[in-house]
Image (cartoon, rainbow, N blue to C red; front, side):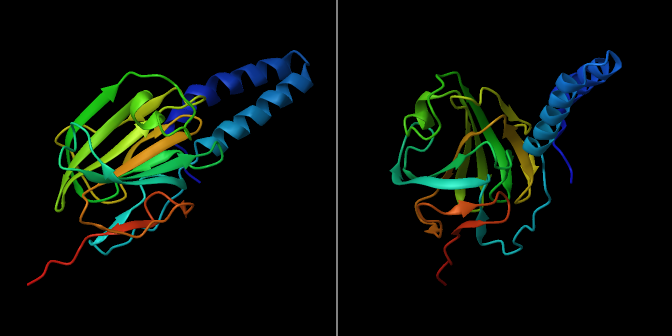
Length: 212
């Protein structure tokens, strides 16, 4: 199974420390570090996903559980209103984020905020986050990576002007948090409260069929 390269920041020093402890004969703490390396690899796993080919389908940007659906989401970035679907990522979920729809990165906005628990709905606006806005065939679509009480590091690897296919990697959040998917109001929402979704493969919404 592939792993996100972010894991090297932890795996390399932990492995070196474990080897040093083994060399000095301190087996118990060395094995503890080996266990920690295994957990880090588990956390940073990046399994391949089957991306739905239907261009009308919008997929989940992250693994996790749908904890909020706001049909009247509105702020300066989405002044005409939008639908916001919030996904909570536990520490056991895959933490790579993916593009929910094909599009071009129009803007990236970093907000340095607080670190409320990810299930607190104030976290969407108040917590440290990075919002990526895509220009798509149906208008503006946003993916907001939100830090949490434990997750203190949001990694976004896309650039303004970059074109992404549906399901391509955006970045990741370290150690559990929350991702908001912001969609135009006219989409046909398929996700429901409590749904467990997989980034890049679970269908969240459908683009409405244009009337002739």
